[in-house]
Picture (tube, rainbow, N blue to C red):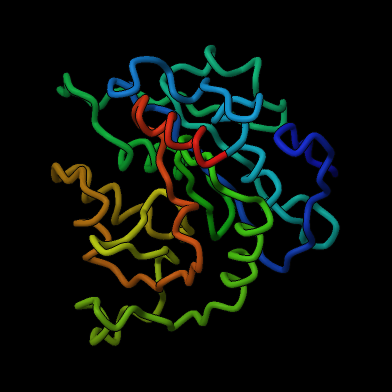
Amino acid sequence: MPVPNQAMGKVMPNTNYDLALSGIVLAGGLSSRMGRDKALIQVEGVPLLRRVCDVALSCIGQVSGQVSGQVYIVTPWPERYVDILPETCRFVREVQLPAETTPHGPLVGFAQGLAHVETDWVLLLACDLPQLKAEVVQSWVKQLEQTRENAIDQRSRYAIDQKSRYANALLPRNPKGWEPLCGFYRRQCLPSLTEFINQGGRSFQRWLAQHPVQELLVSDTRLFFNCNTPADLEQLEIQD
């Protein structure tokens, strides 16, 4: 089944993978620093959210001739975006946790989306990554297929735990830690994620520190450029 790729101006067919994969795109931020909904900001004539969704859709390959997974858009406001996204995307309405009055952040949104995933692996993306390229992320999927199940990041305290055989995530690194909103996670990490959240945890980095993670090798870190402020948007326009 071909995937419409509005950002590229053509239809991009799904790639055949041996790995069943779903996608989650987070679009729940308030965009307070931008001053307007950044998911709707157009880059090269295409809303940011649509660009990222097109990348995710291009990575949901086929296994035995069947589309292997689904792309989920996690947001408190599905009605804002329904007209700009393909019908093949599914919305998960992000809800406030009981007794919380402030925004809970992306970790909770990820957990709410992950609860709907049926494949073993999921690609997680933030909606504000304008420099993501479909062909690059597709190469990451190939890297994921080649990931050894017992690969554990040697800097993790879980590297010496023989019970932790499997890497729960494949993520890029930056000087401050992991890039949690642009990488791959196992569905089986949901129980530990839920427990962490129920105990008050909201930090991706602190949660990931408790689990085996393998590094995703990325040559161009500009792919992780976030468009959070008007200055970021201006910088992006200058680069273009």
